[in-house]
Figure 1 (cartoon, one colour):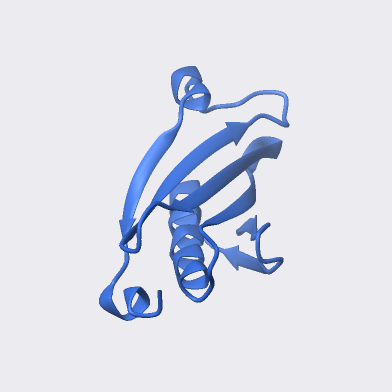
Figure 2 (tube, helix red, strand yellow):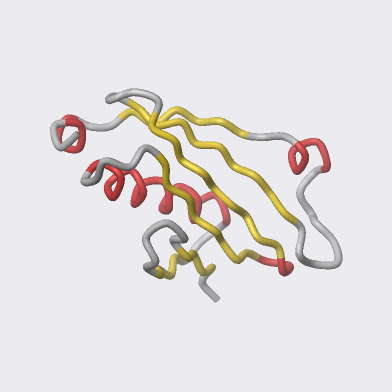
Length: 105
């Protein structure tokens, strides 16, 4: 069964087959494209994932050239299989835009 991703910022839904990591990468790619076409400096996605958990990704543009991804976890189910240290912390990933997307900024 595919994971379900709901783009909270833009109101569109997409279904992606694969692991949570595959899903979050797909969401990141889509948000990079969507933010590039707007004046917005931030986008977010709320993902319903296995075990009744919700995984939220917030993307913030920190310059013309890249976005920083910040991933937070919230537990909505009886147990969270993610290691506690990772669940409490934040993961940041820098996303460099390609020339085509960057030229739209």
